[in-house]
Image (tube, rainbow, N blue to C red; front, side, top):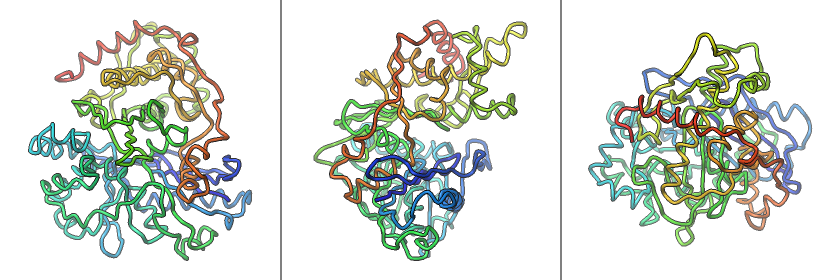
Length: 495
């Protein structure tokens, strides 16, 4: 059986068709080739049109169909991964009411803070494992107060992946994992967060039907099946946020296993079997794809907004003629530590690990007689790696003791400079795997459709392509301390 995986990213949409037996992709494509835009109508805002996600999916799918490398009628199940925390509102006819307020939008921080104080920080952490912060529930509260005419028309609140599944099937569903990433799930009662919903004055009918991540979330409609040249009625059998799905794609399912990614944002994601949380909600705890009330699996997520988006921004400003491969080779010409040049990468909205504060991007230590382009691009990669170290230390303070981290061989992890800097800064070995979110979504579809007897069977063919150890990494203690001092200097009310 063939499995279709769809990854609704911020920068692009990627699709892969995977052979269920070999667990290898037979065709993959992404759209657009250039980074998709984010609408920023006001400082701190970030929006995208859900209909654009659908159009990008169709364009990417048409690319793989054109290769004629597979028979689309052999696709037996569909899985969807998506950018987390986004708010999509549809009316009773299924029409989108406004652009999605996406993950890096900062406008709703005050709404989450007010709810946290009203319900009590201890209550929020013990029931939701997070402060309401800037997540989907708070974004809906912003809409309710500032766009009441939109709120009044809303029939259902969807996460981005819920919307794509709805477009495919006409069925609206969600899961504990999806609602938990919006801080709309109460782990104490294993049900939607009724007290928070009541505080905000939300109608409970806004929430879709809740069912397991691995289950049938609808059957492919006849008109979409015709568009995709697939059989009508095949199931959408898996939906998950991009970071839980990235962990799944690496086989990270059980307590103690850890994944990382460095795409538009940067993430370290650890699986636990306890309902733990960070007292300051700087790292966040959500239901993992295989979570069950009787057998908890909690994804502990460190998210850094300004990683790949910073590097791509710098490329557009100062290295438009260079490919990323050439840019990484240039950065490798600078010595470890970037000859004293430091960069804070925090310029893409409020950073959760900085208690929802932000410094903006800061360059420091520039010597006009010494530093060159190579130093600049190495310092960018080191600054991003140091932000991972800072966040990982928060996770360590909460009891995490990583011995190895798994990552896909993609995005910044394709850079030797970044890989070396990440391992050198964190002191943790990294194993790279040839996989990505769309492949993970396809394998998740196979699990949800029952093609695989258990989740472990879906990753039997997977093996690391390389492992990089701290013994091979540069010593960056002095450079990290310099970076840390710069952070303390620029971060208001340092936490």
